[in-house]
Image (cartoon, rainbow, N blue to C red; front, side, top):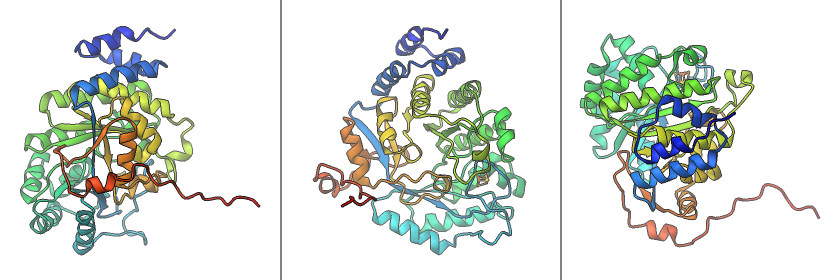
Length: 381
Ligand code: SF4
């Protein structure tokens, strides 16, 4: 018989920290609406009640060459294969110029683990971009890339992060977290292990940079692994306070080796419950992000009542999860409409959650409804 979860929710609402046993009981419960209500209450206390934030940025994947194998990835190409690429600085600048023209404040730049790129390659890239766009926020790389630099250049994580900070990195995305438990990780990936991922994040925060933390579940993990993941993220946050946000999403299966093997995938309810439990368990992380890009606009919107206070990015360009089957798209007008219809005021932000105010926003919101999608079928005569 499932445990009565109300005492656990009351505990969270009274400001008491949840244990990993509490977290397990919540994730095992089917009472997801009650969990969502408690998570929403916590979100309203932690962040301005009537506002949902979003960012305009772009993913630039500077290379698809990758030296390791993750069976959940549809993006990487092995070194030497014909369809590999490395973007030139000019190509990256062109993409940044387009992002700025659309009101964007930063770029999320990540790539595969290239076997030849040492610390100097990354320093050159950052310093060139930072010199050209001094105010543009370079939200770059991930723990697996930093671990790869460490293997190639023989430097410790903290030295690498100090050098990248001096070269112009602004903050770091929490990519490559997947499930932070080696029982799961070692089955699906040969990149950095749990301890290495967490240690990179400690180094990022130690040098004074902020980062996000992520979770991708549905890769053969069980509830116990998800609980350990949340516990590890909360522990690092207790030590450093450097995570700005937590972003859970579900594995996208298309075109992946793992996708052919997986027999169960998380449902919409699993996603909403994971999001809500994250809000309740991660009492030391301010922002919880809805992942409309992977879950679709409608579930992404519903997430705003399950603990999320942010709808992530407009994402002018994205290559990694779209390669694995996430083909959701929204422009700024559409995303703002979803937020308003959920009962909130949309607010653009930058990567550190500072509000960004533009003169053209009122014009954008003028027509109150979102344009309807083009129908792809014709009426029969
Ligand atoms: S997820 Fe990243 S590290 Fe893993 S194969 Fe894909 S590009 Fe490489």
